Image (cartoon, rainbow, N blue to C red; front, side, top):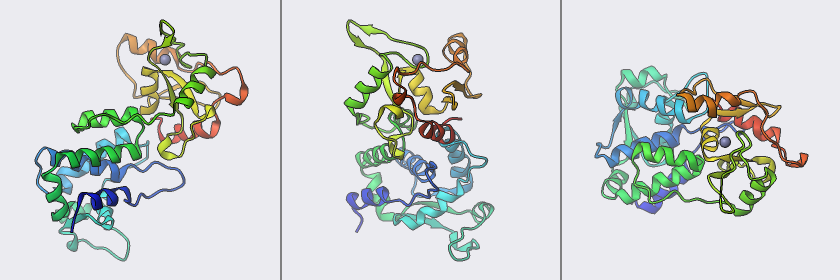
Length: 288
Ligand SMILES: [Zn+2]
Protein backbone atom coordinates (compact mmCIF):
# COMPACT_ATOMS: atom_id res chain seq x y z
CA UNK A 1 0.00 0.00 0.00
CA UNK A 2 1.29 3.41 -0.91
CA UNK A 3 1.09 6.13 1.67
CA UNK A 4 2.46 9.63 1.82
CA UNK A 5 4.79 8.67 4.68
CA UNK A 6 6.26 5.80 2.72
CA UNK A 7 6.71 8.02 -0.31
CA UNK A 8 8.39 10.72 1.78
CA UNK A 9 10.77 8.14 3.13
CA UNK A 10 11.48 6.68 -0.30
CA UNK A 11 12.29 10.12 -1.65
CA UNK A 12 14.54 10.82 1.32
CA UNK A 13 16.34 7.57 0.54
CA UNK A 14 16.89 7.98 -3.22
CA UNK A 15 20.26 6.63 -4.13
CA UNK A 16 22.49 9.47 -5.15
CA UNK A 17 25.54 8.57 -7.10
CA UNK A 18 28.36 10.35 -5.34
CA UNK A 19 31.96 10.42 -6.20
CA UNK A 20 33.80 12.13 -3.38
CA UNK A 21 31.94 15.32 -2.67
CA UNK A 22 30.68 16.02 -6.15
CA UNK A 23 27.23 17.44 -6.47
CA UNK A 24 24.80 15.16 -8.24
CA UNK A 25 21.47 16.98 -8.48
CA UNK A 26 20.18 14.81 -11.34
CA UNK A 27 17.51 12.81 -9.55
CA UNK A 28 16.42 15.73 -7.36
CA UNK A 29 15.95 18.02 -10.37
CA UNK A 30 14.10 15.35 -12.34
CA UNK A 31 11.74 14.70 -9.41
CA UNK A 32 11.09 18.41 -8.93
CA UNK A 33 10.35 18.78 -12.63
CA UNK A 34 7.92 15.86 -12.58
CA UNK A 35 6.20 17.02 -9.39
CA UNK A 36 5.80 20.54 -10.80
CA UNK A 37 4.12 19.08 -13.88
CA UNK A 38 1.82 16.84 -11.85
CA UNK A 39 0.72 19.95 -10.05
CA UNK A 40 -0.29 21.38 -13.43
CA UNK A 41 -2.30 18.24 -14.18
CA UNK A 42 0.21 16.26 -16.25
CA UNK A 43 -0.57 12.59 -16.86
CA UNK A 44 1.44 9.97 -14.99
CA UNK A 45 4.14 9.22 -17.56
CA UNK A 46 6.64 11.48 -19.30
CA UNK A 47 8.04 10.66 -22.72
CA UNK A 48 11.81 10.75 -22.40
CA UNK A 49 12.66 12.19 -25.79
CA UNK A 50 10.08 14.99 -25.96
CA UNK A 51 9.39 15.81 -22.32
CA UNK A 52 12.49 15.04 -20.31
CA UNK A 53 15.74 15.08 -22.24
CA UNK A 54 16.03 18.77 -23.15
CA UNK A 55 14.08 20.04 -20.18
CA UNK A 56 16.23 18.22 -17.63
CA UNK A 57 19.37 19.11 -19.56
CA UNK A 58 18.51 22.77 -19.20
CA UNK A 59 17.82 22.41 -15.46
CA UNK A 60 21.15 20.62 -14.99
CA UNK A 61 22.98 23.36 -16.86
CA UNK A 62 21.42 26.02 -14.73
CA UNK A 63 21.25 24.45 -11.30
CA UNK A 64 23.86 21.72 -11.48
CA UNK A 65 27.63 21.91 -11.34
CA UNK A 66 29.54 22.62 -14.52
CA UNK A 67 30.33 19.39 -16.34
CA UNK A 68 31.72 18.48 -19.75
CA UNK A 69 28.46 16.70 -20.49
CA UNK A 70 25.12 16.19 -18.81
CA UNK A 71 23.30 12.87 -18.84
CA UNK A 72 19.57 13.39 -18.34
CA UNK A 73 19.02 9.74 -19.25
CA UNK A 74 20.80 8.52 -16.14
CA UNK A 75 18.40 9.65 -13.40
CA UNK A 76 15.43 8.88 -15.64
CA UNK A 77 16.54 5.27 -15.96
CA UNK A 78 18.01 4.77 -12.52
CA UNK A 79 15.14 6.11 -10.48
CA UNK A 80 13.38 2.82 -11.07
CA UNK A 81 15.64 1.32 -8.43
CA UNK A 82 14.21 3.66 -5.81
CA UNK A 83 10.86 1.99 -5.30
CA UNK A 84 8.29 4.47 -6.66
CA UNK A 85 9.30 5.06 -10.29
CA UNK A 86 8.16 3.09 -13.30
CA UNK A 87 9.31 2.94 -16.88
CA UNK A 88 7.30 1.95 -19.91
CA UNK A 89 8.86 0.34 -23.02
CA UNK A 90 12.10 -0.20 -21.12
CA UNK A 91 11.87 -3.91 -21.96
CA UNK A 92 12.75 -3.05 -25.58
CA UNK A 93 16.08 -1.57 -24.54
CA UNK A 94 19.30 -3.53 -24.41
CA UNK A 95 20.52 -3.88 -20.87
CA UNK A 96 23.13 -6.16 -19.51
CA UNK A 97 23.31 -6.61 -15.77
CA UNK A 98 23.45 -3.26 -14.05
CA UNK A 99 24.32 -1.32 -17.17
CA UNK A 100 21.77 1.07 -18.51
CA UNK A 101 21.06 1.26 -22.25
CA UNK A 102 22.66 3.97 -24.40
CA UNK A 103 20.69 7.23 -24.22
CA UNK A 104 19.70 6.90 -27.89
CA UNK A 105 17.66 3.78 -27.14
CA UNK A 106 15.43 5.65 -24.73
CA UNK A 107 14.53 7.90 -27.62
CA UNK A 108 14.23 5.18 -30.23
CA UNK A 109 12.07 2.91 -28.07
CA UNK A 110 9.95 5.81 -26.83
CA UNK A 111 10.63 5.02 -23.22
CA UNK A 112 8.35 6.87 -20.81
CA UNK A 113 8.59 7.14 -17.04
CA UNK A 114 6.89 8.53 -13.97
CA UNK A 115 5.70 7.64 -10.50
CA UNK A 116 3.93 4.28 -10.20
CA UNK A 117 0.12 4.17 -10.24
CA UNK A 118 -0.41 4.10 -6.49
CA UNK A 119 1.91 6.98 -5.74
CA UNK A 120 0.64 8.97 -8.71
CA UNK A 121 -2.86 8.60 -7.30
CA UNK A 122 -1.66 10.00 -3.98
CA UNK A 123 0.08 12.92 -5.61
CA UNK A 124 -2.65 14.14 -7.93
CA UNK A 125 -5.17 14.35 -5.14
CA UNK A 126 -2.93 16.33 -2.82
CA UNK A 127 -1.07 19.42 -3.92
CA UNK A 128 -0.06 19.71 -0.27
CA UNK A 129 1.85 16.44 -0.56
CA UNK A 130 3.51 17.66 -3.76
CA UNK A 131 4.52 20.86 -1.96
CA UNK A 132 5.95 19.05 1.03
CA UNK A 133 7.91 16.59 -1.13
CA UNK A 134 9.27 19.46 -3.23
CA UNK A 135 10.30 21.27 -0.09
CA UNK A 136 11.97 18.14 1.26
CA UNK A 137 13.96 17.66 -1.97
CA UNK A 138 14.96 21.31 -2.15
CA UNK A 139 16.13 21.43 1.47
CA UNK A 140 18.21 18.29 1.10
CA UNK A 141 20.04 19.31 -2.05
CA UNK A 142 20.17 23.11 -2.44
CA UNK A 143 21.05 26.16 -0.33
CA UNK A 144 18.25 28.50 0.66
CA UNK A 145 18.79 31.12 -2.03
CA UNK A 146 18.51 28.48 -4.76
CA UNK A 147 15.58 26.71 -3.06
CA UNK A 148 13.61 29.91 -3.50
CA UNK A 149 14.64 30.35 -7.10
CA UNK A 150 13.67 26.83 -8.13
CA UNK A 151 10.41 26.90 -6.17
CA UNK A 152 9.44 30.20 -7.81
CA UNK A 153 10.31 29.03 -11.28
CA UNK A 154 8.52 25.71 -10.96
CA UNK A 155 5.53 27.20 -9.21
CA UNK A 156 5.58 25.13 -6.04
CA UNK A 157 3.18 26.25 -3.43
CA UNK A 158 5.68 26.20 -0.63
CA UNK A 159 4.48 28.11 2.38
CA UNK A 160 7.86 29.37 3.33
CA UNK A 161 11.38 28.29 2.73
CA UNK A 162 12.42 27.16 6.15
CA UNK A 163 15.39 29.21 7.17
CA UNK A 164 17.34 26.74 9.21
CA UNK A 165 19.90 29.23 10.29
CA UNK A 166 22.53 28.98 12.87
CA UNK A 167 22.34 32.40 14.54
CA UNK A 168 25.77 31.96 16.07
CA UNK A 169 27.33 31.33 12.65
CA UNK A 170 25.76 34.48 11.27
CA UNK A 171 26.88 36.55 14.23
CA UNK A 172 30.45 35.22 14.16
CA UNK A 173 30.87 35.63 10.41
CA UNK A 174 29.44 39.15 10.25
CA UNK A 175 31.62 40.19 13.16
CA UNK A 176 34.77 38.66 11.63
CA UNK A 177 34.12 40.68 8.46
CA UNK A 178 33.36 43.86 10.37
CA UNK A 179 29.72 43.87 9.21
CA UNK A 180 30.64 44.53 5.58
CA UNK A 181 30.19 42.61 2.35
CA UNK A 182 33.58 40.99 1.71
CA UNK A 183 33.25 41.79 -2.00
CA UNK A 184 31.77 45.29 -2.27
CA UNK A 185 31.93 46.67 1.26
CA UNK A 186 28.16 47.17 1.48
CA UNK A 187 27.45 48.00 5.10
CA UNK A 188 24.02 49.58 5.34
CA UNK A 189 22.59 49.86 8.80
CA UNK A 190 19.13 50.84 9.85
CA UNK A 191 19.84 52.51 13.15
CA UNK A 192 22.14 49.87 14.58
CA UNK A 193 21.14 46.75 12.73
CA UNK A 194 22.72 45.65 9.46
CA UNK A 195 20.35 45.40 6.47
CA UNK A 196 20.68 42.90 3.61
CA UNK A 197 23.95 41.58 4.98
CA UNK A 198 24.19 37.82 5.20
CA UNK A 199 26.52 35.04 6.27
CA UNK A 200 27.10 32.77 3.27
CA UNK A 201 28.35 29.21 3.50
CA UNK A 202 31.21 28.58 1.06
CA UNK A 203 30.74 24.81 1.06
CA UNK A 204 27.03 24.12 1.27
CA UNK A 205 25.60 22.69 4.48
CA UNK A 206 23.83 20.12 2.26
CA UNK A 207 27.28 18.77 1.38
CA UNK A 208 28.68 18.81 4.89
CA UNK A 209 30.06 22.37 4.94
CA UNK A 210 30.47 23.35 8.62
CA UNK A 211 28.96 26.42 10.29
CA UNK A 212 32.37 27.87 11.11
CA UNK A 213 33.99 31.18 10.21
CA UNK A 214 36.53 29.68 7.73
CA UNK A 215 33.55 28.29 5.79
CA UNK A 216 31.73 31.62 5.88
CA UNK A 217 31.73 34.93 4.08
CA UNK A 218 29.84 38.08 4.96
CA UNK A 219 28.10 39.09 1.74
CA UNK A 220 25.39 41.55 0.77
CA UNK A 221 22.18 39.89 -0.40
CA UNK A 222 23.05 40.32 -4.08
CA UNK A 223 26.57 38.95 -3.86
CA UNK A 224 25.33 36.11 -1.65
CA UNK A 225 22.77 35.04 -4.21
CA UNK A 226 25.30 35.33 -7.04
CA UNK A 227 27.85 33.33 -5.03
CA UNK A 228 25.37 30.47 -4.37
CA UNK A 229 24.26 30.53 -7.99
CA UNK A 230 27.83 30.12 -9.27
CA UNK A 231 28.11 33.59 -10.84
CA UNK A 232 30.95 34.46 -8.46
CA UNK A 233 33.86 32.38 -7.21
CA UNK A 234 37.09 33.06 -5.35
CA UNK A 235 40.50 31.94 -6.54
CA UNK A 236 43.18 30.52 -4.24
CA UNK A 237 44.40 34.05 -3.47
CA UNK A 238 40.88 35.07 -2.54
CA UNK A 239 40.48 37.22 -5.59
CA UNK A 240 37.03 37.57 -7.10
CA UNK A 241 36.20 35.44 -10.15
CA UNK A 242 33.22 36.45 -12.25
CA UNK A 243 31.56 33.82 -14.43
CA UNK A 244 31.56 34.54 -18.14
CA UNK A 245 27.83 33.85 -18.01
CA UNK A 246 27.18 37.09 -16.09
CA UNK A 247 25.68 39.80 -18.24
CA UNK A 248 23.46 42.81 -17.75
CA UNK A 249 23.46 46.59 -17.82
CA UNK A 250 25.51 49.28 -16.13
CA UNK A 251 24.71 48.45 -12.53
CA UNK A 252 25.72 44.82 -13.18
CA UNK A 253 29.10 45.95 -14.46
CA UNK A 254 29.56 47.96 -11.30
CA UNK A 255 28.39 45.20 -8.98
CA UNK A 256 30.29 42.41 -10.71
CA UNK A 257 32.89 43.18 -13.34
CA UNK A 258 34.39 46.07 -11.37
CA UNK A 259 35.34 43.59 -8.64
CA UNK A 260 36.79 40.93 -10.94
CA UNK A 261 40.34 40.07 -9.92
CA UNK A 262 40.17 42.13 -6.73
CA UNK A 263 40.93 40.50 -3.43
CA UNK A 264 38.02 40.35 -0.98
CA UNK A 265 38.24 42.14 2.37
CA UNK A 266 39.54 39.59 4.80
CA UNK A 267 39.00 39.18 8.52
CA UNK A 268 41.59 40.61 10.91
CA UNK A 269 42.58 37.18 12.15
CA UNK A 270 44.28 34.83 9.74
CA UNK A 271 42.62 31.83 11.38
CA UNK A 272 39.30 33.22 10.19
CA UNK A 273 40.27 33.48 6.54
CA UNK A 274 38.24 31.36 4.13
CA UNK A 275 39.68 27.87 4.02
CA UNK A 276 41.04 26.83 0.62
CA UNK A 277 39.45 23.36 0.92
CA UNK A 278 36.00 24.95 0.99
CA UNK A 279 36.85 27.51 -1.71
CA UNK A 280 38.13 24.75 -3.94
CA UNK A 281 34.88 22.80 -3.46
CA UNK A 282 32.89 25.90 -4.36
CA UNK A 283 34.97 26.55 -7.50
CA UNK A 284 34.59 22.96 -8.62
CA UNK A 285 30.95 22.29 -7.72
CA UNK A 286 29.21 25.66 -7.84
CA UNK A 287 31.13 28.27 -9.83
CA UNK A 288 30.06 28.30 -13.48
ZN1 LIG B 1 28.26 42.97 -1.95
